[in-house]
Amino acid sequence: MLRTTTARRPLVALFVVLIGLLAACAPGTEPRATERTDVRPYALPPLAFAERALVAVYDIEVEPVRFDVSVLSPRERDPRLYVDLSRGIGDVVTNELFDLGRFRVVERQALGRVMEEQDLGQTGRFDDRAVAELGRLLGAELILTGAVSEFSLDRATVGSAVLGLIGGTTITTARVGVDLRFVDVRTGEVLGVGRGLGVAQDAEITIDGLEQAVRLLRAGTVRESIVAIALRNAIRDAVEQASVGLPPRTP
Image (cartoon, rainbow, N blue to C red):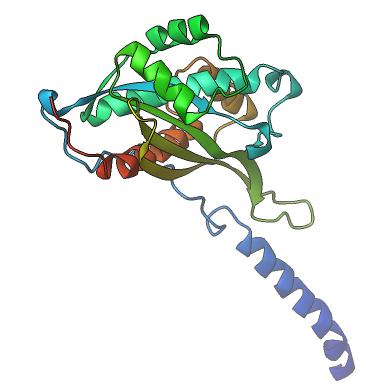
C-alpha cells in the first residue's frame, strides 16, 4: 500500500503544478496593460496676444526608415503614405502650437500655396535657410520645422496560453518621437529645439481601428486613439522644450 501511494505522488505533484499554471494565467491575475493615457495639459502659461510671435509651421520630415507600421495591411502602406503623413502631422503640430497660447499661427493653406509657387521639390526642402525664406514670404517671424524621430505600432500578447486552453490579451502600443525646432526667418538661425516622446497602449483597439487612425492622420485629423494620444503628447513635449529658450518678442 505504501508503494502504491509513493508511485502516485509524482502524478499528484504534476497535477498541482498544472493547476498553478492555469491559475497564474487566469484573467483575474494576468499582467495588466498600462492604462491608456490622456493628452496631457500644457505646463507653460499662455502669453498676452501682443507678446505672441507669428509662426509658420512647415511640413514635418518623415523618413520611412524611422517607421515600423508592419502591423498595417499592405493597402495602407501605399507609396504616398509618408508624403501624406508629413503634411498631416504638420497640420496636427499647427493645432497643438495654437492651443499652447504663446504664438500666432499662419494658416497652413497659405504655406502650401507659397511652397507650390517656390517649387522647392525634394532637394533642399528641409534646409533651414530655404525654410526661413518661405517664412519671410509669409510675413512670419519664426518658422517651426522638424522631423518624426520614431513611429511604431506594435501588438504583443500578454499572458501565455497553457495547453491551448487559455489565451493571452493582445496589447497594442503606439510609440511616437518628434523633434521640432524654431528658426528665425531673418537669419536662418535655430533659436529653440525640442524633443518629445509619446507612448500609449490599448488592449481593445483592432487592426481596423489602427488603420482608421492612420488614415485620419494622413488627412491631418486626430481623434481619440492611442496613435493620436502618443503623437499629441510627443508634440506637446517638443513644443514646450523648444519654446522655453526663445527670446521675448519685440513688437
